[in-house]
Image (cartoon, rainbow, N blue to C red; front, side, top):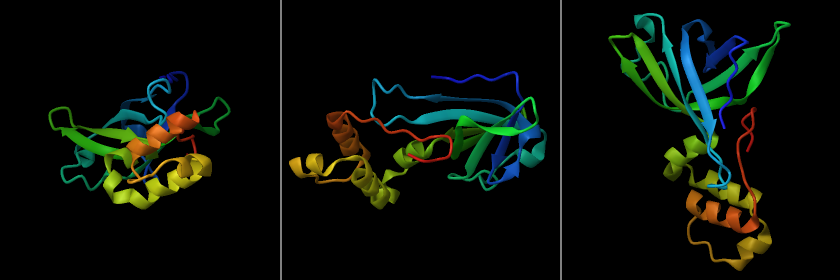
Length: 167
């Protein structure tokens, strides 16, 4: 599912710094809940406006940097987009066009790309979303996203991240 909003100005903040004037393009989409019980949001954001945004060392937009997206409403107020709380997963530069493209994703996509570093957080997802009845019915050898996906499927549950970053 993609959300397109071309009638309102999009505001983008990366680690609480406003990059709205540098935004060239962007898109996000959700995985289908028919194919996965862990619905991840991923996308790309392209920034440009000069050499100051060319991030050679990946320090200006490091992996894990928080990306927040808002739409400016007709009354001037800001409204967070439905998938407006993302993280930088990777970045690349195009020197000829003087742009930096950020691969972004929700906390579940970030977790999926760095699962080994967050074993205790994955285990907390088990404790939050899998009932004790299901956990007691199976021997869980590894607390990983693959096992969580299977148990969520058994329970008939789907998890995703909302606009505020909550799963």
